[in-house]
Image (cartoon, rainbow, N blue to C red; front, side, top):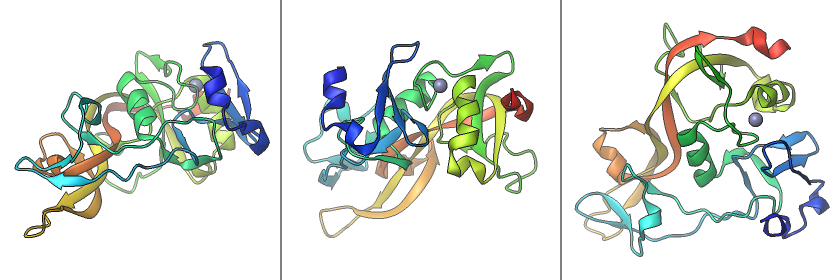
Length: 228
Ligand SMILES: [Zn+2]
C-alpha cells in the first residue's frame, strides 16, 4: 500500500509520508498534515458520459460501484492520494463520503472526537444565516479528532477566516453535487447547477453527487477546548 501511495514521488513536492499511531498514512505538506479528504492534483475527474433515464440520470456504462446504498450516483474521480500537489480547497468524493459516513477525522482518518454532547465539528461561522444556527445546518465537512482540530485552527487558511467548533449529533441527510436537467429533445441531460439537496428531494435522481451531507442537531459551541 505504502509503495503505491508513494508512486509519483510526493517528496519532490515537499510532501512527507508519516505513519501515526493509527497506522494510517498521513501526508505532511509545508503547512502541516494534508487532510485525508483533500484531493490531489493527480486525482482526475473522469469524463463519464451521463445519460437520461426515466428515473433521472445514469452513466452510460454504469456499474454497481457508481451508486451508494442510498441510490446516489457518484462522480468518478481516480484515487491517487499523495501524488502531485494537494488541492486543499477540494475534497475527494470517495474519501469525503467515507469520512462522513463513518464519522472519521477529515485530516487523519482516525475516529472523530466524540463525547456525551456529540461529535466534534469545525464549521465556517454562519451565525447570520438563521436564528439558532448551526442547528439543522447541512454540513459537507467531515468531523475531526481533537488533536487534528487543534492543528487545523492554527494551520488552515479557510478556518482562520472565522470558524466555530461545535459538538453535535448528526445524520446523513443528503448530498451535494451537480444537478442536471433534461436535454429533451436532445438525448443528453444538461448540467444546470450545483446544489445541496436533502433525501426525499426528487432532484437527487438528477444529481451527480460529489459530497455526502450530514445534518447537525443538538449543537453545543465548544470553542474553549481548542485552546488546550
Ligand atoms: Zn485527526
